[in-house]
Length: 155
Image (tube, rainbow, N blue to C red; front, side, top):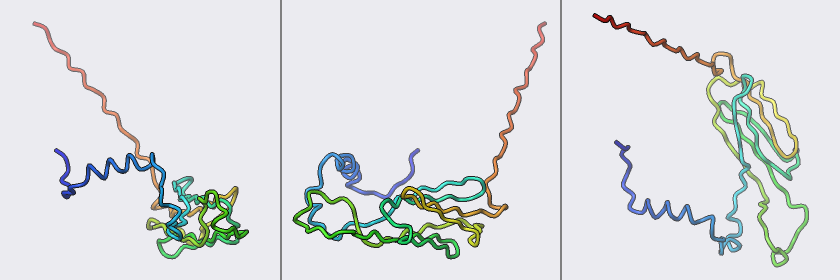
């Protein structure tokens, strides 16, 4: 039996539109000046008893990136500055966004906020957040039960 979902009369239409959207160019995109948002893509994983967060920030100077941890929130702030001014009418295509950004990520309980380290290499900011021993993931062994063989007596 499927889960109960709220009724949305256009659900199928929305699904079809999401499938077709990448196939058509965005005709009015150039008129949406200022509508773009800068948000660096993030990937995070657990490795060697720490949470590792990688933020792609190509073209940024490390001095324009600020990383902070407050309680259970990691904040990555930055600014992509325009190095030269180009007139709007001179652009052939503009896909790069300029300005400030801020990304906030919730951290699990038990991180060691006072031992956070950050590095920058090849346009990627890498933040390593150690986990306390009691909250580190542990592997649970899988017990395999043996099948019992039943002997049948012949009469």
